[in-house]
Image (cartoon, rainbow, N blue to C red; front, side, top):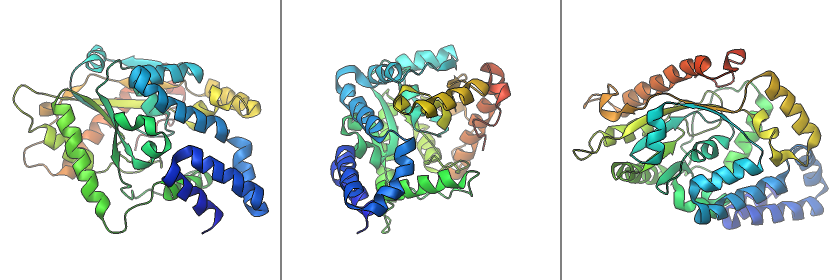
Length: 329
């Protein structure tokens, strides 16, 4: 077992705290590992990020997911621009919905949750998220790695790092058991929504730019269409204006002042941290027929999101100056 495998194994067995302890030990024991990890340590404040993720999970039990995320946003000095239809705000308070959005940095789920003040908001997320912060388990519906087919990245170094980390902390199941478990999770998500809850999902299942939406989201909406009479969930298309620069400009990087200053300059010249959500659509008005396949349903949902993305450029200040920030694919 090499040093990275040891850290990944520690993460899977004991979460972030254990993985960070093993990382520090490997750094002292192995000069090669210390040299290899030095560039990451110089850029990413691992201790601060890990501590904040654990604290976020701990706060959920006390404040709820909405209160915990609002407190985190304040600590991290993040002030997003939010433009949402009035009906979206109503659904965030009460009512069944499925929210679908783009995924770039990991901040998106916290940004969305910070808008809610209810205890029945759940997130479909990778199993590694619950491992990283066990306190979040009460609001997570965990999924195994779907082994998404990501295209060649524009920034290969970033993508290589993503692939390495993802493969270490969120490995796929070579025996195919993940698909069966994911289907059971999607059934539970549908049952929760039909019972009045809100559920948020990243249909691409990955932070890789350009990753295709997975057919599971289409399967989920088709199941919602078979809800009991009187229960009509809505689909909320959420367009996030979030980049690595927004993360680096936050107070999470206060111990890396030169990186934070550079990121703030980049954000100032491009686009603010933003969320746009147009009017939600009832699941029975999406144009998904009773004989539509999951892939066809997913394509309709993706087109709904693409339309919202086009609207966001007109609805949110400064997005006109950075039309590529959101990645419309």
